[in-house]
Image (tube, rainbow, N blue to C red):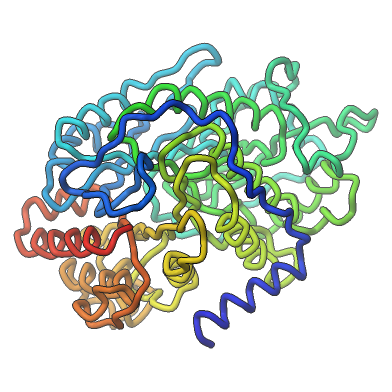
Length: 487
């Protein structure tokens, strides 16, 4: 099946499952005064939207939460100084940045922005709620666990992405909603009366983490549709925008909210956790069309895009793909992701630009729908604003070359992968990244018209490149070729 027919099939499936809301086409009012613009020398502008900042080139993923801060913070300047690097992709949990309701701690983000400014580099933000929600927020959200069976450990999940999570909060969860209650959203029309006598007044539940360093741990997850969670998250994003929007280094932020451990469209769903979602949807919604359906997730992602488009101005809003929604029926999760991405392509985001990315790029996934879909959307000149393309390595090519860079098998333990070196791993993944782009023929792939704007690699790989001239040369060349084709 060709890429275009594959996408059409998924889109038709999505339409069959969901009645997609009509995206807004009107520009939101209240555009802020002109922000400070400009790009660093390593990421020259080529877009036709004056004042909108876009990520271009290679970004190093750094995790600055307390549990990992020393590892990535100590050499943050050395990472930013690498000549192949256009900037920092800073990943942090909400809980690290707002440890108390009335207290923020932006010290690590401030340091990252200061280093980027000094090095004439830019910053992408990946701020994660979900399992990264502060305990004080969880305290205000009543638990659904009294009416649900305990979750089992997941049997799935890459477990490769950087980052961890906080332990499940053991506190009450029976607090008053207070200032946390948000205005009703579009989805609230079908939501059950949570104040009824049946005791189903709840908005969080225990789930087993299905990805990242905390894989397998049971933690409390605020439900994507919970108004307390959504309102506090929007208030936090407003604070972030107020603090960093005027920084010329700030180029993009990932859409998050209906998420779990990362910015990807992934929630825990293995084993009996699928049935937990089914029960939670029945508790939350009167309308049976939401039951054993991903309709609520699709609507909450659309609502999250709206929030980011309203809160931020003149930067790039990034939707991170991921086939990780519940499959109540075969193919339902993939159809839901297609619906979310398709709606994003047409969704107005105020004065911002848009991008999609995959965060699971590896050599054995050359035909994987994530990177293919990113390129198909980036090549679509009919979308306005044009949707940019990006990709993040699935894991470190220098620390796990067989897992990241073996093109013959996705099993790192396969005998055919044993001889894969970091250099070969990097070469194989770049072949996937540049396939069907204007530089494809330079990487033994197909030359095409799909431009890619940025690539994200992990900090250990930049540290490795700092000591390996051949790897550094390969990254230098890749950086220049991305900057040449970037929009």
